[in-house]
Length: 368
Length: 63
Image (cartoon, rainbow over all chains, first blue to last red; front, top):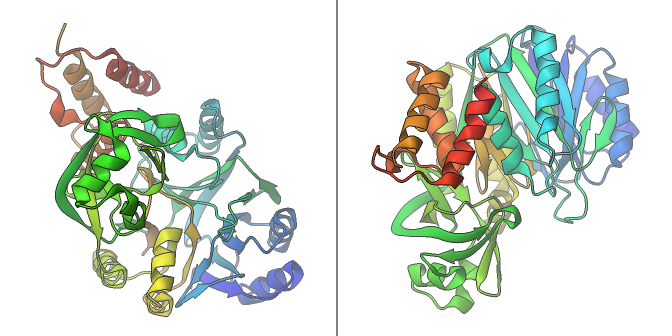
C-alpha cells in the first residue's frame, strides 16, 4: 500500500505521535496530513508531528471531530501517510495573514520556484491543491477566490475547527502552529485522482435574490428588496419567529448547472440574516430542503469508485453542520462505515472549499 | 455604453479555458461565485462599473 491511514485516541501528544509512528512504520513516508482535536496543544502537536516524520512534508489543522476509515471520532488525531509512489512531489506554503491578497501570490511564487512552471500553466489533471484555513478568520471566500483567479489547479479543503468552542482554530505546517492563516499544499500525485462534492439537499422552486448585502460581514440585509429574514420566512410560508429553526433543514444555495453551492444561514440579526459564507449582491439563491446524508454520500462514493476503478485513499472535509445532523439522527456510525473499505482521513470542518467557499457540504479528494 | 461585460467574460473564458469544456465550466462557476452570472449578460447589457472592476482584477491576474 502506498497510502496508509491511521488514528489515535491516546490522551497525550507524545502517546498519539508514537502511536501514529508505529502505524506508519512500514511506509517510507513522503507526506503526512493530519487532523487533531483541539484537545491537543497546537504548538506541541505540530512540533512533535514534524519531529516524528523528519524527512516528510507534514501539515494539518485542528478540528471539530475527526474522520478515519470506518469511523467518526472525537478527541482524537487522524492522519494519512503517503509514499513517493502515491505523491511524486509536494510543496507547502503558509499564508500568514489571510486578509492580505499578496499572501497567496507569495505562496504561489514559492510553488512556481519549486515546480518551475507558472501556476496558470500547471496542468489541473496532474496537480491538485489542498487548503486548510483558520475556521474563524471569516476570509475564506476571498482567499479561495484569489487562488481561483491565479490558477486552474483545483484547491480543495476545509476550515479548521475547535470542537465547537469557537475560540481559536489552528493550521499546522513546518512544525509550527498558525492562526489567521492558511496552509496551501500543492501536490503532484503519482496516481489518478478525482473530487467529490456532495451535499444532501433538493432544490425547491422558491428563489431569493440578494438585493442588499454587507459582503465583508457575510450579512444579507435584503432579499428581493425586502428585509432578509421576512423574505426568507415568507418563501417558506412560516412566521419570521420560526425562521431560525429552519436554517439547518432549509439553507439557500447558488445553483450552478443543477449543482447547489450551499450558503447556510447562521442567525437573524434584527431583520438581516448572517451566513456562514459569503453572499454577493445580485446572487439568485434557491431555497433548499435537506435529504438523506447517508444515501447521498453512499451514491457519491459509488460514483467516484466507478470513475476511478478503485480508491486507494480519501480525504474528507465534512461540514460540522452535517456532523451535527448525523449526531441528531444517531447516524455517525453509519456514516463512518461508508468509509470502511479504503484508507480515509478527514475532519468536521467550519467550512469547505472546492472552487469556492461553501457550507453544509462534504468535499473529498479521492486517489485511485 | 453597453456590452463590455459580455465581451470581457467571453475573453476571459477563451483565454483561460481555450477549448477545454471542463475548464470553461469551472471558470463560469468561479464567475458565478463572484456574483457574475455569464448568462445574464448580452451585448446590450449596461456597463456596470462594479462588475467591470471585478472582471478587470481577473484579467490582470491572467497576465
